[in-house]
Image 1 (cartoon, helix red, strand yellow):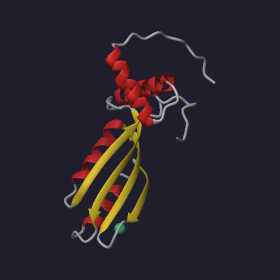
Image 2 (cartoon, helix red, strand yellow):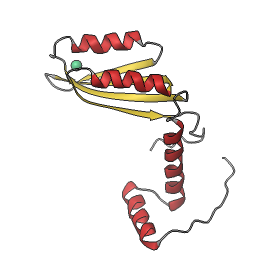
Image 3 (cartoon, rainbow, N blue to C red):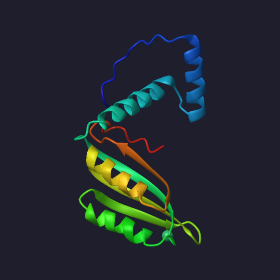
Image 4 (spheres, rainbow, N blue to C red):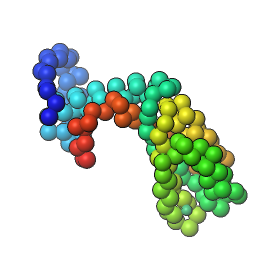
Length: 145
Ligand code: NI
């Protein structure tokens, strides 16, 4: 276990009340773990802004597979950028609708650019990129909650 440092934090009482309600809703056992998660989240968010930062990302896409040439276009984009694409998960949600999750790894700028191309492809109904920086997340951070 990493060495722990103890700090004191001063907060307005109404802000602390809101924080306590928030962590109760999220199921935290104590404030310390909630503080740690919020700080890590913020640090990751800062790290992935740097265009050359090493990041991993997931792109979630929802689309109608009957849209002309759309599945082919999405596959072509992934082949063109195969050095950034780790893997793709595809689920046929119903007769028409596909869910695709693309795992990406590379420089922040490259991951962002490919995600933008995938999400903006005509016919994609909904798309979102979530990026994380493995460099910023400490090794013991594997709670699998
Ligand atoms: Ni499908």
